[in-house]
Image (cartoon, rainbow, N blue to C red; front, side, top):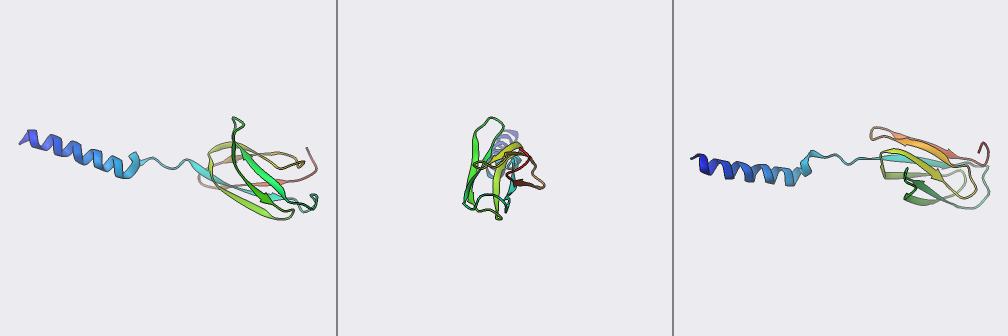
Length: 106
């Protein structure tokens, strides 16, 4: 009886892990980026960079508008757009990191 239980139990555990993904959570968060209204009147290519300098994502944003970035890896990121001042933000799973890019204060 024990010889049958062990393989069945092993198979059940393996199937459970495969279906649940080992219980791992998706380690990403969100960043909301606003381009200041006093920026030059043209669209900006807003980019979110990881600590290693690798770009995470990008969107085109007009002055006065806000872009939301989802699926950003957790940790400190740098947000840049053209000649606007770069800003750093801490991305956490439980909150949206808010960043405003401006032309002053660099």
